[in-house]
Image (tube, rainbow, N blue to C red; front, top):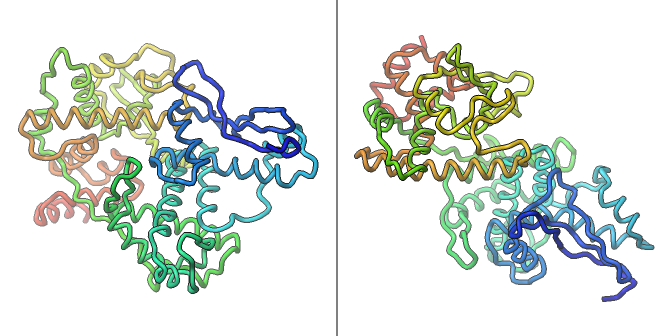
Length: 452
């Protein structure tokens, strides 16, 4: 290494857990080395084995690795690029000056260089705002588009860029290149191999229409922002009636019959199967509590339970951030069965702000909370599915079926549609009407008569 030239590497600090590390960057200059935390809202904690894979992915020309490592790399890449840019631009390097510029909150003067970078920058901003779900969608879209472009042949690239392009040396993908043709080709590719392999060297699989719609809507959002920022002309807008139509999946929603729901409610779990009991309980609690999803169940705090009034009150995590000025508090009935479940797995005697269940705590980052909830849902789906099979229930049973079963059983019993809408926390009655997908035509017609 030239000791007169600064350089950086991905580094780490140890944590209290010997198997976990906190990702940082290490800057070297004239035999002096200093580590800097990444300017994220929360430290990036990963396993030591994932750290080794991350470094290898960064340094190696062989870019094949798992999707999780790619996502982590997309998260830190803007900071790596910033570190390199600072090093390149400083005429006389000094650690204090590097630190000042690296942590500067000054907005980027230059717009994002292309669509991919715009998606990655947007993801970083969403992460800072603890919107980890939307941040992941932005990064997943960026990764998907990179895979799509890498799969194209010479003639396909020429059609997209409107010029000869050398395979393996792709020019910058700008917003002007996002045309109806690009989007149609991207959709066709997604339907063949849009689902990335889980392991390096694995086989790609077709993506669902739902996934395609989600990714394309991310592109549409970024295109609208680019128009608003005057980075691209509105004349080039590729979406809409005269352009590309975002595909919409038709979800055939399945609700269990009341008879099958009661089978699960009355199912006696084995004494030596705690995960089976917990999974059944969480599913039943969801069903009895207005179809509350598991993210909201995990987020329940002691203040949300009123035993005297027999109520559970909560605001849906899914919509809380989008409706800060008009947050709808959902009130569900607290059945005796629900109270038993809360006492069996949680603590109702904590402070008002304490979580009832031991799954989450306030020291967790939003990303960590998301991962914990995802794992609980996975375990619950597994065991409830096994319970359903044991009971001879033919339909697939997951946590979502608890929510849909709550709504449809009420609908079939003649409940008012507006009441169902409020109970589910839907802002639009059309969303509630989508639950009719699992009914027969005549049955749907009878229910819809209550609209008039």
